[in-house]
Amino acid sequence: MKEFISLVHDLDIRGDNVWVVTPKCGTTWMQELLWLLINNCDFDGALAKDQCLRSPFLEYDFVVHGNLEQSLKRVQECESPRLIKSHLPLAFLPAKLRERKNKVIYVFRNPLDAWVSRYYHGVTYGTFYGKTLHQYFDDLLSNENYALETIEHAAEFYQLRNEPWVFYTSFERMKKDLRGVINDVSRFLNTTVTDLQMERLLKHLSFEEMQKNPTTNHLWEKSQENCENAGKVDYNFLRRGKVNGYKNELLPEHIEKAKFLIQKQLDRNNVTLEELLLKNNQ
Image (cartoon, rainbow, N blue to C red; front, side):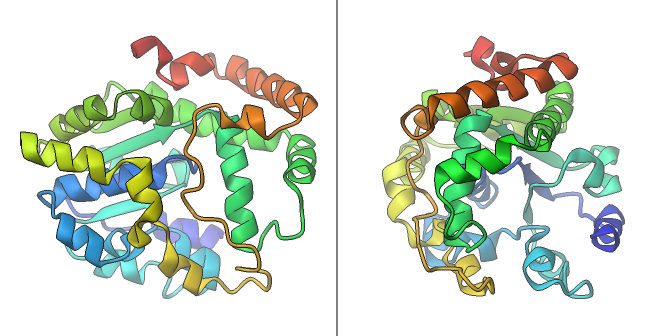
């Protein structure tokens, strides 16, 4: 992993690259919006090719295949305009991003919802096969690093939210005002959206359309998985898309302990959850 991070650190990036970075929450939703905006709302192109192939996931090939030499090949060979996805923290991203010539869009989500989503994703990909959601949370909450990594990941980008090269938003804000987020991101990227394109974007990006769209459900990635238990239980990648859906799935004791650990890291980073979720800006 250290060798891979070194490769990423030295990655030669193009001036027109756009990056979508998240601690794994709302990535696919924002990724689809960004790809459409930087490709002049080419809906036919979006529907014709898996999102994973239109917009490479920076660390995916190394994590899945472990081949260091080939780990960045798809990213390097992707044609411009290039939209790159990553879950890496700021310090591990390419050093040239600090030159502020690229645009970075960051999305955060309530960690409790994000962790529930991560569980179902992990079951499908085989990582958490055979483990119940409650067992997963027992393990997760026994290690404070989950809360630490999630909050620090977001807090770093939140501090940069007023930089001209960073656009910071939240899953919750997208759920509440998708039209507003589209307009804001469009201005950030210096693109224009016509009234007709806006209406089609709102329909294409609705949860109902995204859920049934095979190109936004990571079918190509699923075909690449080599975990022994991958696919034995198959949840749709876009499963529920609810705000505060965790309340219907977790035990009260899990919620209480998770909130305690999250608050501990929020205090450490001198930020509130309301601020990270942009609830004060809605």
